[in-house]
Length: 482
Picture 1 (spheres, one colour):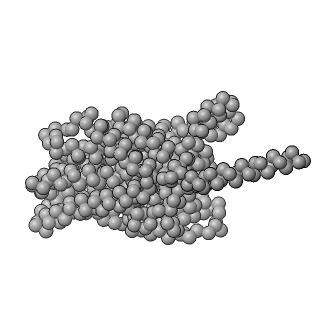
Picture 2: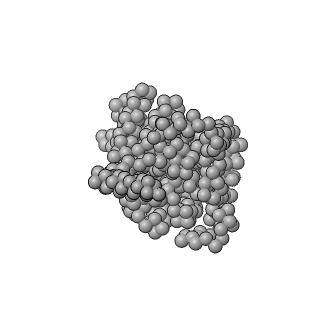
Picture 3: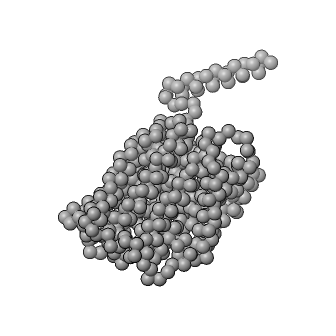
């Protein structure tokens, strides 16, 4: 017994010594994400993620599929309304299940590992890297537009500039959460000022009598009546511009007083963005005919060239600033999704590691950065938007369906926010109609989105569900993540 007691005493002394060494070196015994996101930063994360490249790309797709100016504006307003319904449901989920990770965390908690993993798989593999790639390409195209005024910027130049931008912002997010949120705050204000310039110039045009395209007789004039499937595709393009409304839910654990600030930020941000988007499109149509808008590769630049004269270079600069902030916001939030997935055991444990000094998920950020650069090299902007929009809406619907199931499964659970059942039901009815008609209208694009998601099924059973793997596999993964 003396020998046992001696060993126990030595082990205790060793633990105390290790603890003292950690304290002396400034290394905390448990490293966690810090709560550094207040109400203002929470609003700028939502606004900054929604207003990225979508409002400068999607107007063309919305108008093309809707067939008229009037119906296009209706799609934009309804798109904001649908985002508002979804955000109300996410507000309830966010304060009821206060975990970072958004859709993935809620669905994993409610429906179990497989469904949660499929959302995680599609998001990490295609959804967020693709969205980041689209925003980065928009950034580089608008930056290079003044350098190549009479032709499309070279392929290599746009990819190199996009890659440099992503690498720089990845470094910023690895270095400091506070610096990343300060950049987000500043560039969100910048992008609102840019859109404010477009709206102001458009209103001056309207008050000057230039609103022929907006009169009801002209606005709802169709060259060819759109099918329901085409209208559904118009909503998918609008949904790409509104994507990001749920991103604050990915960083819930870093929000100060999340139960109050999460819903407040949603209630402030979504109506503001819907108003800005609708007024921006009205401004476009006040100075550009539908034919001009459809033929333009850079809508805001064409708008600036027509109305701003010598100050037209302000427009590509403003769009570049807007998309720069969008890239920063997407990197910040998507890396937290990887972090949450690793913490649940659905991704390699390396991705759940946090830098002890900076308190940032550096491995997760590097994975997001690498995946985005790969997508940059293999995809084109408009094709990527179609894939992302379908997978996005699919994920939203599954998540909001989980809210209804959770209400039935745990009716007595305390919910700080409890929305009317009409809200998720109305959202899911619209969701089912939209996805059904989209699948009918463009089965190839929607089918590819489904296939990408379902490829996660064998990966889940081999990588997560199968516990008794050969020892060599555990040795290998331990060596790689140790």
